[in-house]
Length: 173
Length: 390
Ligand SMILES: [Zn+2]
Image (cartoon, chains in turn cyan, orange):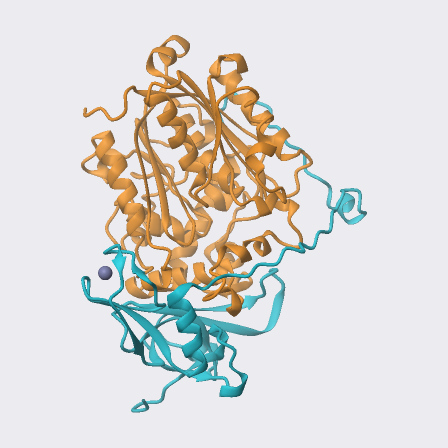
């Protein structure tokens, strides 16, 4: 703001007026429904989750093994050459611990979320998922983790077929 | 100097509204108030404006889909060439960049650049409106929120450089203090590092006082070609460099400790402005600070210091208004408020006022001739940078 300007437009609504319903509040629940096509690579990825396997794409030009898999390499801008499986183990690249829900309300039990670099994928290739079976204060960068899968009959071809990743003990694979 | 574009472009006027949660004014009215102020400052009337560029972020905040059209009358766009730009949080600095090419290209002699956001329409919290920005297959089923992913980035940055929360908290202390001198500021406060560290944990390592508020507001600038600017004012502020860049949307495949895309945008802008040594040549900078760690992260991406060095400069007071490299003298998003697009545009306005010597109590101590404003957005992947000179 310039010191040449002496008046600043804008008037705040009083909280009491908001609470008293003096501000028109339109409650709107969208009825729109979306059927997202997953595409060729991600459809296979979701099918393989039902089998307890994690699918990756291979680009021979840049040499990357990519998770999540994709039909084209965004660097080389060409179709990927192959698909392969990576392990359901990996290490924590970074993590955070959420004490609030999507609507910003407090939650009782915090959610630990992490970017997990999966074994067998190229370095730095992570996926977003949750961490479980550990107190949040014990989580460490670089910690080895393994997927905890839903029982096969409960899997539905979704990223949530992996319930979360749990820490691996020393020497565990 | 190497000339990019056809013509040199100046900012000749700027205006803004109060930044507040729950403003009575509609989005259109906020645009009009800030636009009228900017036109008055430039000594122009709406009939003198040849084109209008509007910048505003997700429609879901205002709750009006296609809000470029919704806001057009307030932006003074009636019967004029008009477009809306949107690059997430990067919009506020990208909007004047789009205005710049309207004029630099030779298409128009004047352009009104309008940025607006009204986030408090969305109940119970605008964070909710962000759900649909995430990948529907990999991310949404997990219940992902924006604060999750920013906390992931902050934590990675802290881990790679061994940065402590105390160091990052100093940014919040500085910016909220700076905002005490900004008449439009929403959250000016005198707080301590301890206050930040003791504030409510939202998503570790992010706490309540690490974060900017939900805001309504608008900010506007008037751009003019050189021959018009020189007729209208003795002290135009020139836009000498612009840059913008996006990185891959596969953000879990990138190392979040460093914003390479901000570096790319900065290199583009520095090259255009003929800047070889940014820390020496930039006198004052408004870098995007929706969270306190982002100011440090962005100082490094903008090459205003070496990687991992920004916390130390902050501790040493280098980034204070009387320091060698004042950062966010306005009070930033942390102090002035964060109506997304309007917040980025507020930074451009602040550099304009700083370079004109009109910033009053906020004026930086050094004789500022070259300034920078930057914004950041999308899925931690977009940078927009503008360099201005008096
Ligand atoms: Zn490739």
